[in-house]
Length: 85
Image (cartoon, rainbow, N blue to C red; front, top):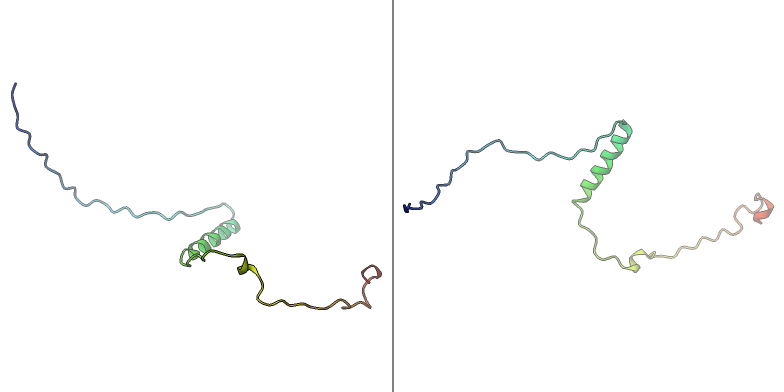
């Protein structure tokens, strides 16, 4: 049995290669109108990334601040058909 000394492997330092640039995912379509629409949706979603998301929404957030009642019960009653009177 021959005993060989185990030498630590030397690490090869790799040279700098070509830097890979990530590609943007583009949505393509054959129809130009659909392509413009998909670009708009993609652009809007990209813009929404910069807006902080709202906090927890409560039912009070969906209530109107003021109650407005428009009383137009007799509006144009003279010129309406009889079944609307």
